[in-house]
Image 1 (cartoon, rainbow, N blue to C red):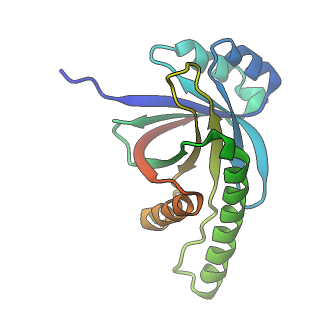
Image 2 (cartoon, rainbow, N blue to C red):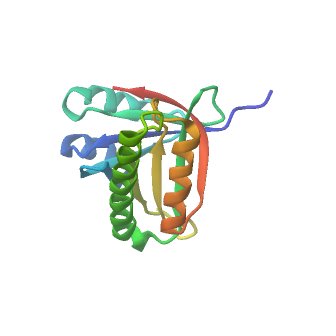
Amino acid sequence: MNAKKSKVFLFAPKNEQLENLLAQHNNVREAKYITPHECVPYMRVRVRKFSNGVVGIARQFAASAAPIIEYTVGDVESDKQVATIRIPEPERFEEVVALAEKFCKKVWKTSYAEHKEDASKPELFFTCRVSKVTARTEKAKSWVEVFAVEKHAVPREAWQASVISLAQEIGGEAVFYNAIINEY
């Protein structure tokens, strides 16, 4: 029997109490949540295999740190997609955040104007999370990662094209995964 390969991530607004609890597991990574209107501090947590404690801690904080969103990505049965763009230079974190901010605004303004002229064209409110992932060992590599989630109201092709365009602008490659998404 083949085991499915998947990874679990949590994203949550920066919350000092939650961060302190999760930091005990060395899972918390610096991140920014970016929309066309804001760029706010966030946390990215990679949930290790069999680590139900991290998910349990996050669920307990759902009332004070919502929305906490859990993504299971990879070899999963789902019609929802997420995309990642990895940049191997962690020192580019602030630059990538700035580029993503400009990109989200540009995509929204352009798609809004096109939708206003022709209602059949989708309005794309593009959002993403940019994380700085630092390695814990000498042999491991650090990177900056852009994480984007497919929107219901936007055709997949338009969303994927935007992700690919952002990847080109920041010098990375977009990789798409099926995802199971839970929000607390």
